[in-house]
Length: 255
Image (tube, rainbow, N blue to C red; front, side, top):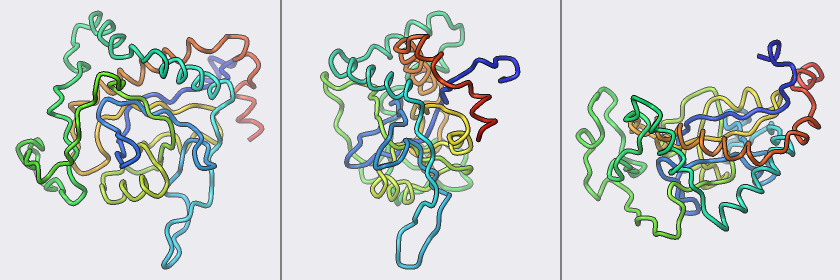
């Protein structure tokens, strides 16, 4: 890509990820997570790069770079606008879907399909059935959450730490531990290999809860929401600000 487009200066990693709900962060399916500096980290936490010491928690031994200043400024500007006026991302997605013939794949699924199972409820390994049949909908099995009220953005946008590694996260206990200890909001598999070489921002639409209860029902809508946010973000960046950034090719050669 850089051979064809040598003037590229910034990047966005846009797609889907697994959410990490916690007492502090009410992350739900269809929400958006934007990597933002938190706790001295640059916005992306490589959770499989570090060391484990007996009787102590995992200690990371490397930190990933922050996104470029031009992107951090755009995120702050857009965040302030959304806090004052709310966002229209769901409406933007609905408008975009009118231009797509096979829109069912990207349409928002029904609310009742957003089920957060308790951490000790594991989907049977060899079952090919959907969770509503295999695992059930009993209130004793799921985390009961109040519906968002009219003042809440829905889907919501969360800013903070994205956990990245080269393996899929599907363990609810580890998910909850990293969410509580590190403030992780979501998990993904691409950013860890890029952040220290490729100046970029991570934008993830939440399609599952990083546990054993995987489903593809929310993937299309989550991807559309992430793309809608990315489009809104790019509108906040004046072209002359981008031109002030170093070309990514130069960054890679000097790294």
